[in-house]
Image 1: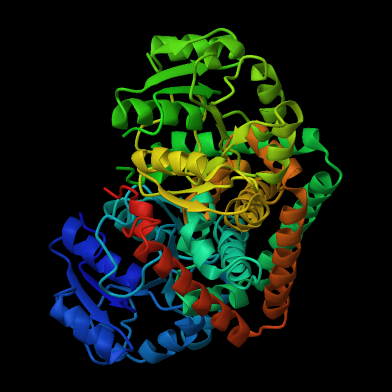
Image 2 (image 1 turned 45 degrees about the horizontal axis):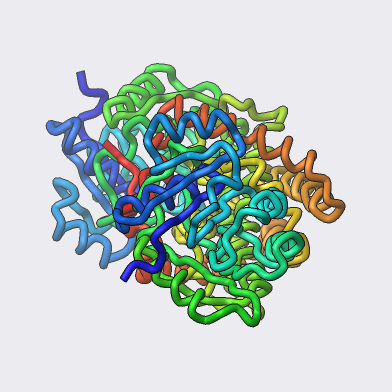
Length: 302
Length: 302
């Protein structure tokens, strides 16, 4: 049996529009309603027939929903919750997809203190944004992490679990604080570093920007992909998950200082040992189906 | 007309074996001879019929060559040059593919002070190593940088230019010192950072290695690819291009400190502005054909 029959998605960017498409592809009898704060996005969503209905106000979108998923940037979650507070049915489950949970849950609780909240963060995405960037299989084979706050009704958690399985995800449950620590290292720190190095490379005087672009296949281009991600969302993530990000960044800085010292002093053994260790992680990621086994991410070479 | 008729490749790893395959595919009348210091690699190369001939000694491989390309790690270039010094024909052109040129050229010059040397560094690769990892189209559409030392015969440079064009590359000429600076930022710094963050993530106590692997699709997995590159080669690159790498690393550290401070003090505007700027670089890389336009590097999503 389907876990929900009337799903509302608020925020129709990459993730929201992928959920809408996934529901239509894998749960075709479910009614999907959408809303986005931007009139332009709503117009696009209507044009590409993303949902059964697109409403002009957030309140109208939730009025008879049994599941409402907030897919707005972390910093906009509190306001999105406030905007549906009057119209959200008492028995509806509320969910959201933020990459940092503790502060987002607190923000939602301010206007909806008694709501049944089952956050579900799909660890998936691309560097593209907007309603046209989404696709139904985005979540297939990827993990989705549920972070129900303590005391959440287990039946509600089970329904969310079933929902994400039907979208193709593997589902895991974690407490919000641990989720934020895990994501700080697997997602937030990599994004911060990628944003940094792309900035560093474009600010040089000795090497032109055109040279950086031409010779980017030496490794640099890999970093430019995630440094092309949505700036609003990422600003919000770093502000909302500040403590965990600063902790991971501190460790990274210590580790890079150690390698920097090895380079300065010509300690080849230290470098070699470090570089050998990191190969094993790649192998595990591929073995567990979390990346393409083809060389170079399977990029086209002919 | 073909620029060479008897090409010798010393070092049959990813790059050497890709050149061998490329010559056979795109210049089929050219005779290709190969040698590798490892008996196991020579055996594999014979089994997969990589070259017309595989010799057991470096001297025998060069005896009547008109082009010899050294494809060994940077730290082994000097010894490879010494090993062919007696047998290298006086009119042969010597080339090598190192990712750092100034120190490698100096090392080769020690045993071959008068050789016609036209280094050619193809900015291409995958995370895989060994004779079976190569493929004929690896260099297609990628840049190859020639770094002839001052005073090199222009006719020799022109022949190398033609050779790499026939392998599918765009060819550019640069002086060795500038090459090393460009590669420090487009290739060496990205690899160092990737190696670092993968190490940082696998050393945490609060987050398990299994969690890092499971949730790597949040961004981390992108870094694991280049951190799986050949440890010997990369040790040599960092030792050989020390000054340029340390300079780029210093700039990177300053830039990450600035973003770290913005996170600590909640300066969302600073973060947003930085994250907006870096998007443009990605667009240019795709426009210039240096990466796949498909989202997520074109990774398979179904």
